[in-house]
Length: 129
Image 1 (spheres, rainbow, N blue to C red):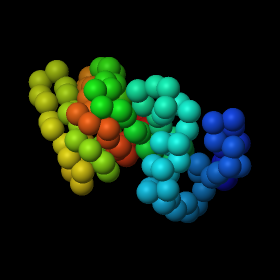
Image 2 (spheres, rainbow, N blue to C red):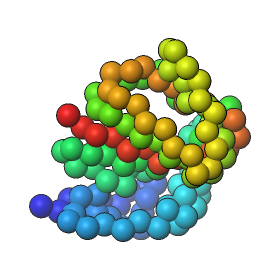
Image 3 (cartoon, helix red, strand yellow):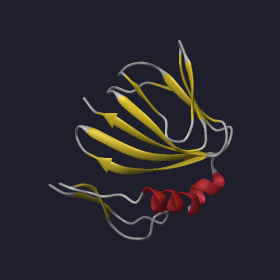
């Protein structure tokens, strides 16, 4: 069954599929769009959920320089792929500096944080249990 997000004041361009048998994304366009929104201008980050199913989420996240996503835990495995700018991905036992084109994976239930060294954008994929 296909699912759609409704248009909102922040995203007035209409409905968009978040779950369908096939969905394509223009990541460059999505990045431009989230950087135009008021949330990006007022806050230290902005994000858009590109895919939301019972078993997977894909979220595009943009962070301003020095923004910190404080420690949190995912119930499923995650992957994080850097699309713009460097970030530091931290767990209790390690720090990984990642640049554009680099990716990291992490198993479930491991506390982690993300710090933007400059303005940065990454794609977060989460497996849902």
